Length: 142
Image 1 (cartoon, rainbow, N blue to C red):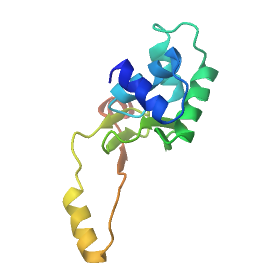
Image 2: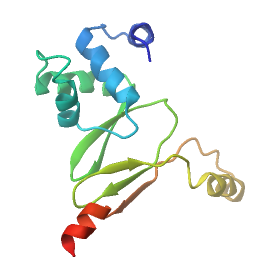
Image 3: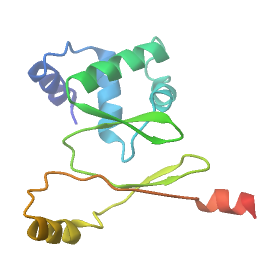
Image 4: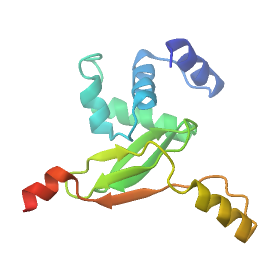
């Protein structure tokens, strides 16, 4: 996503465009997996040395309140953030180290269609998360 597009999204949602907000939004947009505020902070430290972790949290709160970003508590009781409207994503999460892997397809699309026919619901969205142990954590426990 270009800076201009980011500014347009902010303007449409009545958010003041700042360099720090653009960096956070761009990072979330480019990420295949949801990120914690701490992960965002670490990834942006090289680009924006004047950004504190508390600034990241304030920016994320603005994005969540405006409906641009979804906040979820899906891993180790830490909140993770991902941009809404970028297509739905499903994930596998290691319950030991918290590693998150995005699935490249939706494994339940056919089931969703069958469920709509069976229940006469108009399903508008769904979220699917698998939990388990990654190969590194399995090796450590052996």
